[in-house]
Image 1: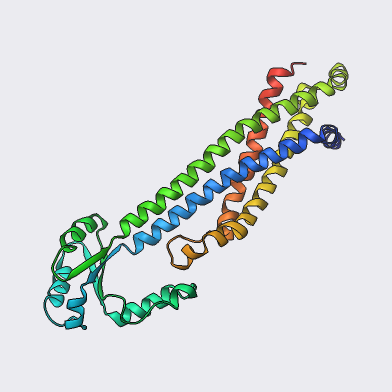
Image 2 (image 1 turned 90 degrees about the horizontal axis):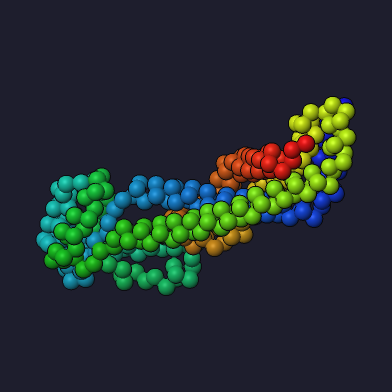
Length: 300
């Protein structure tokens, strides 16, 4: 009987203050969605960093004069550079890529982007050494040593690309968390105000119940549960919004970067992983706010 009474009171309270309830649900949903978006960006950054750490490498492009004279890298200075690189401290492996291999690799890399793939012509891409490092701390030393050596016409330094990508990811994450923090303040104020209004509109009922012996917790629990139920609904909306954002924003906006394996793909499993945390944060936020509000403003 008591449980059914409390459930009925919660339902009545949500219906009586329907506009404030809807506002609280939407504010909570947006807050948790921004927070969840920040968590997804962190997951993307962590997985992307693993991609780069698994393939810490540099590419040294061989000049056209050397490639034309020695296309298979059998003679000096090409073979000399190859031997020196393999003997270098911190180098795991060195692979010589001739012009044909470079062409095939480029076609494979951009197979999902036909506009680029169709414009690649065999013989136009330079031969190169692809150097994988076993010790990432030696990356800069090896690169600086060989980039000006005779026979080397340029380098591909992935460190700058990584720095730019992660600076963008860090900025996106910080922006999402900042907006979420601001909205969290708005959600807290809205929850507190809703609880106050609900308690005020039912002050007569509460007073009568206290006179007949109802405990303080029994009379105030419906108000607390109203806030928790609203936050629960908001968290579910936030989770649904993140699944939609994954399909309609992340997958579409980042398709090209996914295709060339620059950024790790956000999956449904990633969203599902953070979903319980959004529910927990929403419920705890509403529960604590409602409890503190009732302790401060409702003293009967």
